[in-house]
Length: 187
Image (cartoon, rainbow, N blue to C red):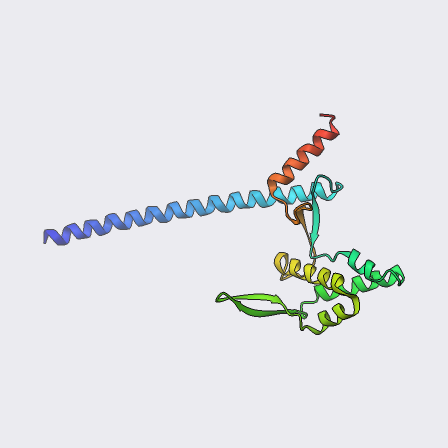
């Protein structure tokens, strides 16, 4: 009988421990969420500030998923600039069309992953008609949209490190902003 009583108190102690761990877990998750929200807000504020500043020192704002116009312009130098603008605009519309999904699923090292379907008719025709640079610009913009805004399929602004070709860290953004503010104050 004493054995049964000991195991019942042990069970109660373990339940209390479990409750305490669940409370701690909830507290940590809440703190992490709050910290993450603060980081997101800080990043948004940096993007607002940098959006109005010229890109300098490698840190600025890049609109992710927005096509780079230059490959279109270079491919169409012999044609009027208006035609290049029209073509770029048309492809921007294609990129934003939720019904166009030029990806295929493949297995790589036992993992499913989406890759650009080079057999997509629009992409094949684009590459044939406009060349590799324009094709790569469209594929890059599509991949950016798919990573940064897959549900909305419209371009979004992002703090960008143009020197390294990647998202800028908050630290890089704040450092660059400090430098700019120091230059403007004559520091």
